[in-house]
Length: 180
Image 1 (tube, helix red, strand yellow):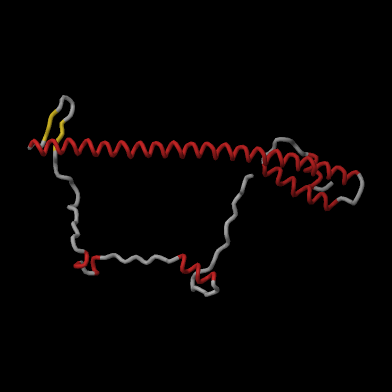
Image 2 (cartoon, rainbow, N blue to C red; image 1 turned 90 degrees about the vertical axis):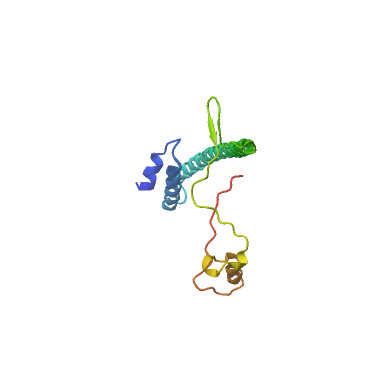
């Protein structure tokens, strides 16, 4: 008895997808080995039928899981967006409140205030002094950075029209799984 037939006898339910993949390949090999007619052909056809049924159930299970995970990912994305918006709102409010405190202190000539819990002071920021560029036309080229960036659209147009571009070729498009 060949390995394909031994695998047919060891057939079990609720197995991982890779085991079903191995069975599909073994069933194809077993089908090539049997004669046209007889009990062996009937056994192989029954085995193939059971593999097809199990494969369909496994595909449905995978797809339901993928759909559930996609739904959870979408919900997490929505929550993250909501929290991002809340963070931006809070940061804007912080900036506004600090500005109001600073404006009050400047208007009253105070550089520090003491509350019951907190102390507030106006002080210089650390780090490098900001550059105020009031006339960029007077700045010489030595103070500019030049970056070389490929123009992918121009390269693609050349390749699509049959013009060779040294060092570049079109690659193969990837594949994706669509669930309907």
